[in-house]
Length: 197
Length: 197
Ligand SMILES: [Zn+2]
Ligand SMILES: [Zn+2]
Image (cartoon, rainbow over all chains, first blue to last red):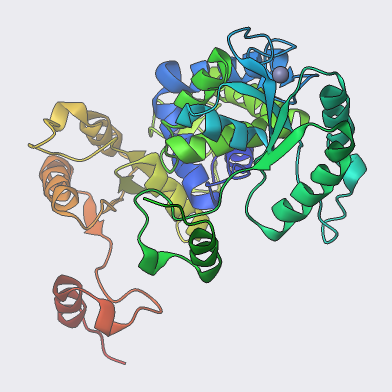
């Protein structure tokens, strides 16, 4: 086998999602082959990200600033608050470039199975932001899973007393999606939410 | 999008074999979630590996010692020299635990297409080791590809004048392999090299 340092590197790489033991070995060798172009820059960037990036105390986004770049961007509409499960979902919406309001990251979904209750999610922070008076609409963008929908209902109950408008992302046929490949639930929702042409 | 530090981390991770842009984002988020348990240890280990691990000046293996742990292991038979294309192949043989001699890593294969010639591989070092007088058998374990076989022939020509025995790994049916799934070349080689039961 390889020496203890390399074995440790392989073990750590194998814990990344998408890499198994075999691909972790290949990745370690690739890193060693490209020491100056990849291994050392990756080490430095990991250290830098580890030292500087933290969860935004306002919205839960990950950034080197707190509040984060989105929370402090005055061009973004602070009256629109999009509630997402995770930073990954926030990134997906930002990549799409379709939303110009602010976010609130819950940090997960309610799950009896995994023992995730309301206090494990950043819901109190959401309620406080909504009660702050500047938010006019809360857009619930949790995933269309059972847990996501359960969480959406719970958030609705918690936010409703404030009187702000609560909306959720529409269900329907994905753009470019083929009906033949869609599940019954999506087809049913798309049919129910049909709109005049 | 994420901030510049995170974007840079994603770009570097996406250059690892086995990770695309999408899985690199997932890996970056996973690292940020497990900052103390994974991100910082990975940064430190990369730095350590980058600083301490180098190619063994004798055999080309990667190790923090030079000569490497294999070259300096007196329990290993120095009269047997196994020639492999890459450190990955050396690791594969070590994992199998079937070889107790020493190695010589070529660092690639001859390839007219990729412009890899004899001087790009560590063949002179191999000839020098063989001429050193302690090697009795050179086992050529290049891959069973066109380039691997071409390289094997070239090495045979270069090592032959020394008079040491030159062997190569046997071709045949992989253990547990089903004939139905094997290519004609392997089947032909297995038939040709048939042995009495
Ligand atoms: Zn923020
Ligand atoms: Zn060595």
